[in-house]
Amino acid sequence: QVQLVESGGGLVQAGGSLRLSCTASGRTFGSYAMGWFRQAPGKEREFVTAISWSGGTTYYADSVKGRFTISRDNVKNTVYLQMNSLKPEDTAVYYCAADDRIRVDRSRWSRGALDAWGQGTLVTVSS
Image 1 (cartoon, one colour):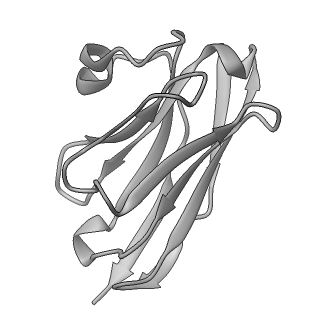
Image 2 (cartoon, helix red, strand yellow; image 1 turned 90 degrees about the vertical axis):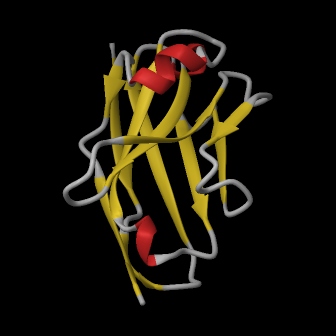
């Protein structure tokens, strides 16, 4: 089992940027597909983005496409979420997740049926 710890959340003005990090420990990080979900107040958790173990394949929710970028550094056991052009509707707790598969299984990621979750980090975007 892999353990995940997120960092980098905070308060930012609309139009600004933040970079979230998720550091993994435990099992070999490189064998996991990784990604991010978010949950806004009063709303259900939603998929944001995912990346394969090699970093060669990425998927994004339509709501963040062109603004957010996921990347990973398997030497540092860390996955990143660069968030640009932030909007108030991006306000949410962001959760890192891992799936014990080298490729992104879109069915599993769409259902949130994954193997490990972080504790979440709060991102607040002010208007």
